[in-house]
Length: 121
Image 1 (cartoon, rainbow, N blue to C red):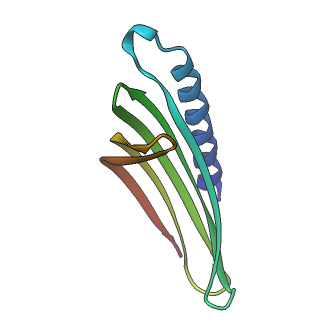
Image 2 (image 1 turned 90 degrees about the vertical axis):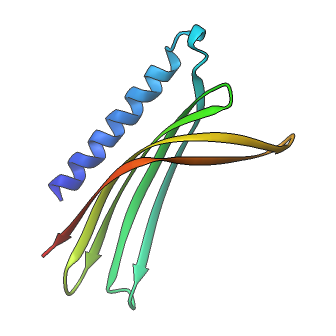
């Protein structure tokens, strides 16, 4: 549980720092804030004796038609009987935005990431 709290704090500090950084970037670089998303999720499985939560966040910048994204996710499972799992994930993504009409856009991304998966015994 200490690892989860430490991971949450580090992700929060990272997101705040990157948001502050993106607001201070020189206009000559043409790199500007694109989007931010945060998605909490709670789930229950197997007749409600297993459950958990996950948090995902993305922070994106764009330069002309290019989109650069940092994505982080964490998750923890809670089990009454048996073993529980948890994970942490960090991704760096490159993408492009496609405009379908005046109000509808689609982003496509590719990238690399690292996943830490822990089984708690």
